[in-house]
Length: 419
Image (cartoon, rainbow, N blue to C red; front, side, top):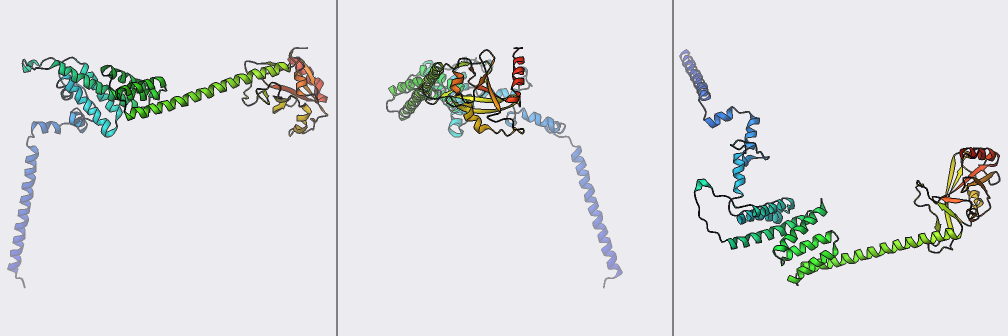
């Protein structure tokens, strides 16, 4: 059992431990204050005073961290110094070396990723690099003596130019989703430029032929294939393309033959129809605003036989009640009775005013008058009288109840200014 002395000893030790912990906490806080008040290195101090937005802007002006092209100025001429320095690296060396660098980048994009638009841009940069004048010597580096074999350098440049033209032609050939005709034209121009440098470039002949085929320029496509085969008579790709072009040529020829035959058939049918109408003394006239009825037309039973049965589209008018019926094929040997017998009774005729015995039929004459059309006469008898005409290929017949005929005729004359 603990004595009073033991309890006092324990309490004294606990108090000492608490004092020690408080001392350590105080020292830690003082150290933090001292560290916070200590001056930072100049670079870190500058970042500490910069907002997050300004820091991101600054990083975007550094080529390594760029997410967009920033060319705002910080140098004497107002350009982004770091960016311009990085750009300059791409143009270090001779024209051939610079062009070759761009060519290799374009080729890598084609070979590995099929990124034809970006590859085309690199080939264009390579071709532009071959056209730029030599860089002037750097005055800071002093005079430099560099011996260059100009003939060898020129051969190298021509080889790079030829390759870039042919490869850019490939890019244009593959980029057919948009502006296809423009791309095929660019392909042909690049192939032509490459062939001026080297007429033996079979790839250029092949790609030129492919572009011409895509544009259906068959003679030019065949000529390009034959020209390529002169230099490589066993080239499998050119032979296969030649067969494809010949098949297309045969297909286009067949389409042209069918088109010409169809046109000749239409011409013959129209001439036969005119002869049939003339032989039957049927007058016709066209207006500036014909009705839109592409399937309804005057037609012969045999389109190339003027003596075969002739049919007309006919519109039956019920002017008193503002109603109509349409007969697509009214044969010349049929009468109004033949058709009215199945048209009557009319679904809207509540008063039963329309029947074969209670109606009269009228047709307008060439002089804008009226003629009574016999219901039992054939259509040809009516149209061949020389008094009527078919306007815009459509025969019009008005059907009026007998007890309203007089009033309707009077109204018709008033509309025509006959009274």
